Length: 264
Image 1 (cartoon, rainbow, N blue to C red):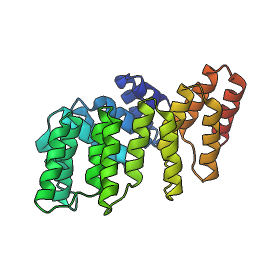
Image 2 (image 1 turned 45 degrees about the vertical axis):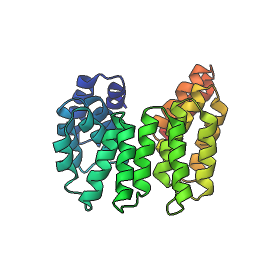
Image 3 (image 1 turned 90 degrees about the vertical axis):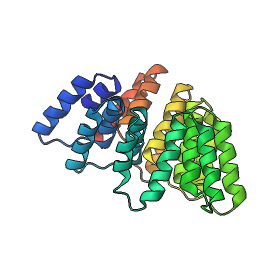
Image 4 (image 1 turned 180 degrees about the horizontal axis):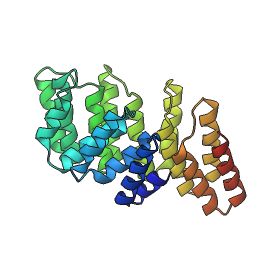
């Protein structure tokens, strides 16, 4: 908790000191803590030192871990490093084409990314769900959720592919960040109706948006929904709820959630 809090507060030296102490005591360091640290180090070469440590310790690497690394490489203009990074992927050609699209999208060059997709089609390469997800991510990062919806509509019209778990995650996060919680909740329901299991991170994003809007009671319902489907709320989930309840002046219920957290 201390290492994560330091990372979130951008007190990187303090976070690194705590992590060194944890390693001395043979304590496990969670993936969210490492991801938060990597995010704050993505403009520096230290990012790779921390990432190599993640691999050496056998810590789980989530999709968010790779998102951070790709983001860092693009911001550092490390295209050659990116090529090397993807050389270990089974389908190197697909991975590299996806990286190029992702690079264009996060750099704000959506026109280039869209043109790249058209070029794929002209050469007989049918864009797949991964391709459309990358385009959606680009629109999301620029706050253009209407563009992301157009991409999804194109997916559906083609009829060959359909939105997957990643697609819904991008759209839900995008609408939450844009303050459109109602649309995000509709997508959550649609996701469940299609048989997709929501992750703890998606629930946390929804909880944060609800608490930010003062809808703490609905946020609590989502917490119980998580538990009902067998998902274990993490430190971030509990922290969001506790903060939201305290902000609403409901310290008693915040204390109850805090005790529940430590009883598990």
